[in-house]
Length: 104
Image 1 (tube, rainbow, N blue to C red):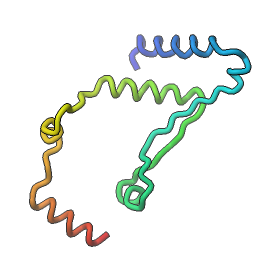
Image 2 (spheres, rainbow, N blue to C red):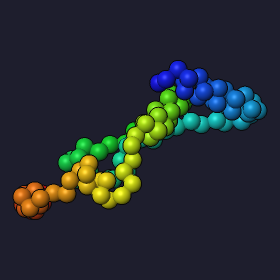
Image 3 (cartoon, rainbow, N blue to C red):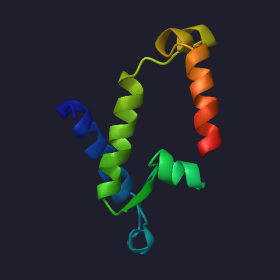
Image 4 (tube, helix red, strand yellow):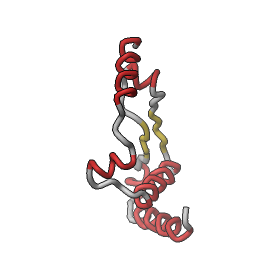
């Protein structure tokens, strides 16, 4: 994480935390859930999709990391931009997928 961003994030959290009363601090809950919400057989077994929840102050680091990735990423704006990055499947891939689907 860039040092300037780390310092800004620490300041942001400290300012927020210091603005809370002791009773509010005692009830403060921090968590970050990352992963896939697909809970079907294919997602678990074929795609190895999982979800994890991190609690406590450590969850702030994950949230900051997600903000950094989103800010540094170049997002496609149109379907054509997506096709340039991930070309649509050809006839062979479609037929192979159809055969594999029958096997599942």
